[in-house]
Image (cartoon, rainbow, N blue to C red; front, side, top):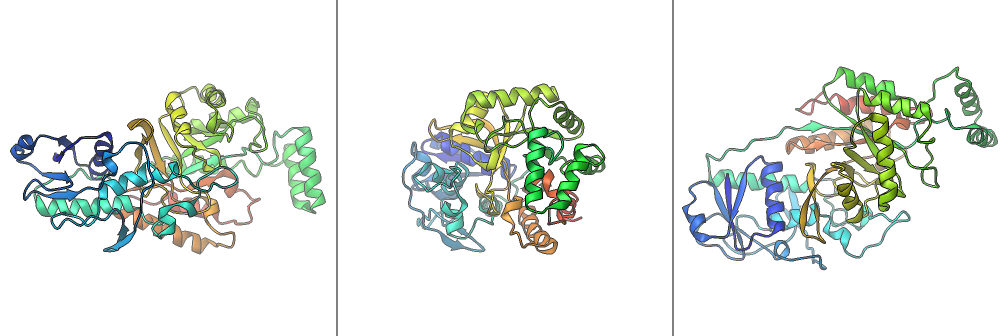
Length: 436
């Protein structure tokens, strides 16, 4: 166990040290504000504050973990070894040249998303507004990289220190915005879609739609057996998120009460973990969210555990508070739809910290590193695999979790980029060493 001396043990201090020490590095940590207890401890220990106590392992702090709420924070990013850092400190005895704990807290809590910023047309915080994008470290899991440098510092000081190291893992997620492309859409939607395709001279789509509607061809979005077969042959688990929102300008899925729709979700849930793709309206409306949660729980006959926000929109902190109130355990919305990388600077799951209430919550946040739209439309199979392999290697080095996002439509014959089944198998088959 690592003992940390800090003059004032704040919720921010406790949250950040536990994420770095316990969840990333596998090291138990405890805190004391009593000098006598710190001196008497004969195991690994360090102090964190403005000044060292003596000759102990010391990390200088900035003010962030001892403040309340949120204020404008000056960020100056500088290169450090093979990565970058911010919140520089200058005490000659500090073990690192920056406050790793404050920088980690800033990224994990999405501190910058509480500050004034320009939103996109859907009300989302964009990648280009983030300090990680602006300073060029969005594609690096810097929190995990920093943590392993912190680990090296501890090992140099305490040669017998023991870490319970976690393993690299892969957890793909699949969002289902539309369960079917043509099937079960109803007469009016089928007729309207057919006329649109005919007007655009998409004659193959017109014929396919007719064949699917009359039952002589499988719907092109019904790629679920392909995913289930992979699940059967591997111990790895993915999560599939189904949308059950009411039909709106943002939600185009078939009706949540459609029997065939429910049968597909139930069938998938027999083999694969199922979560809720929360509709755009439900993200900020507790009553709508509660309805959608009840719908999926009634279909799969189990309590909802996993959520994914439509369009990856996270309205902080209201959305996460609603998830907590409805006892949703884990959310997978933390990422950018059009930029690959690490929105929270990490590839390790972490707890949501509510900056308004200054409390760590029980909601677990998973950060995905890439979604289909983060790749260009002119990408080919080789370039996509190359980029994914780059992320796999970065995440493997810090024993993180590789979480890419896919959709059932990606594997459809309607998708002009026909290589996505191969891409999915490529990521699915990676072992703990990052190899096929």
